[in-house]
Length: 286
Image (tube, rainbow, N blue to C red; front, side):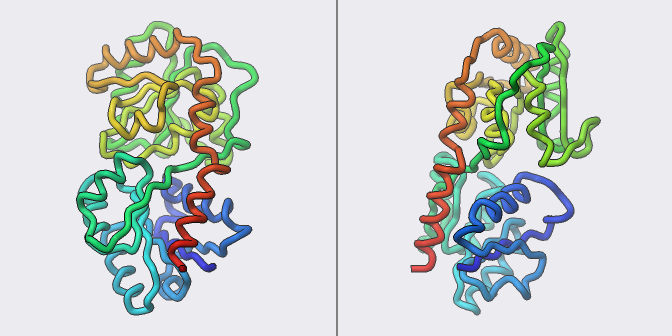
């Protein structure tokens, strides 16, 4: 089976969607020929087509896949909101949600013939492993690009209220930048991972990376984050309140989490999730 992923930003950005595409290509290479392409010309005449940039890209792909009579699959990288409403309106054969709350949301906006399935993000357990020795410096870690939507300032303002705590922020546009190949070493230096996204954030692959490294998580109290983090973290109702967020981080530092984060991440291991991808692609070509 030949699968094409259309990614205009493949060589420009290293965001969650681009990392997801490259990881999917690597994990499924034994069973599927997956190509990541910039070009519509090379893209459409394959068995399954997956545009990942949304908006007009999805519309053009839908028109071309109708002409070639090929299936189109859209993954909900944008999260519940206007962009994925548009993607659903473009009538994909299948819309893939990354969580059950996102699936329930998509069911409300899909066209009657679009099938909605849930396949969560996955994490590589061999790549992301717990640190053998911790620096014990009360390091609060944030991993993500320095953009307003990531709300880094909320975490920084909270950490500033915690005596003897150190804030480490890593990602594009931040003081510390690294590659995806080396990011696992960053997680090993931290004591708590904190990311408080908007409720419409689609998932947050960084949560799985942190959990697999056995880091407890402090995050927003919303259905998607609760499904990801489970009992391996602390949730805040008002992350805009620096004191409330600081209190949650302090509590996370005080708890003996044992291996709870790592066990929670097991629910999202590639060994389990790859079966869902195989089922998805098999059903598309029946």
